[in-house]
Image (tube, rainbow, N blue to C red; front, side):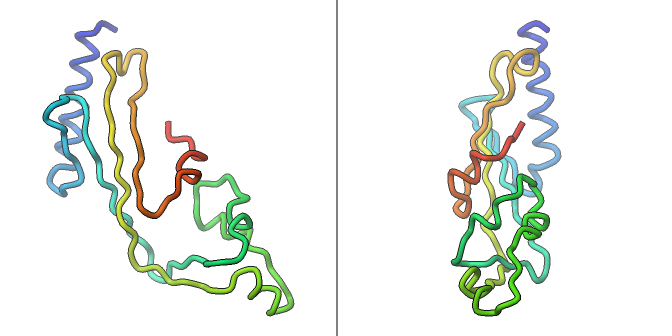
Length: 136
């Protein structure tokens, strides 16, 4: 694929993202870089969503699944209530999470030879949580 074809494909993709996401305000094209922008992903949580606070967070992250519900399958079960309270002292109901922000750039040779470049920003995910996922 030639550089001109790459540029044409990039513009097509930017226009598609704008047409799908712009009305909701979720997409912003950076004016100084024609093939860069930001996508805001609002988090819609189901009723009754909760997390455990305190205790051993590693017990919840043993699963490599991207499905939060399946990672809860790894919550240790205990017959003794005091043991369970020591492990997970508080169940915290969550009604809202701030959005995830994806900053992206389409490199000159995208899509023929290069992948999009992006960073994921969040006020509620730590760097390790983001780094241990494969987002491509």
